[in-house]
Length: 192
Ligand code: ITT
Image 1: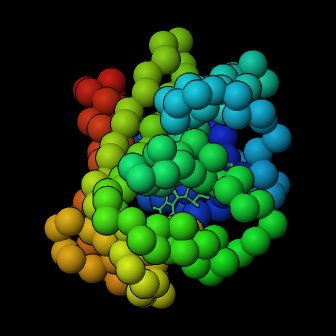
Image 2: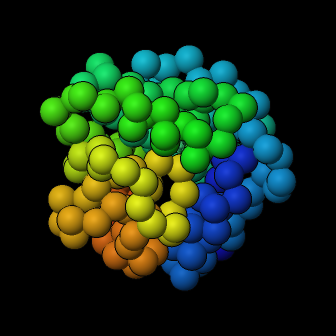
């Protein structure tokens, strides 16, 4: 049995990783209910920040450590909020954050946006797996599924916001789904 630590304070992420890793025979450990992983994300890319989170725990836990970093890049806003997605308008809820973005883009024709996810795995070796979901910023909020910026993100594949998709539909095209499938391929190769 191989032990894996998931370095995140986000319980949704822990659940998703459990679903993927336990069927492969991994014993999944997490940091329990801490609100936020107390690591300064000082990197300038998603990949750097995912590695910073994973490496911060590698010294403490003698097992494989996995962490990820993700966010929304909006072309007309210089790719912001980007790596600052979790901290953008800190203290406000996502209803307010999403309304604010819609206002910022009120007269903007270029609505191009993308979600990015980088998953870092630190063992004897280090690996980063990246996934991207391309789309655009909608003109109004729609849908109740998902979380975060999903209600304003119009997907290319469905012509619906990612908050209007079922979890399975979103997972099939999402940044996190794509990065996770790359991680899975790597782990399957290792276990062969
Ligand atoms: P940890 O750092 O502890 O893992 P976190 O929730 O802070 O947990 P991130 O630093 O990766 O996670 O922040 C990602 C932010 O990007 C998140 O707060 C959302 O606002 C946004 N985001 C990422 N993926 C998203 C998705 O699939 N749908 C909507 N918003 C998303």
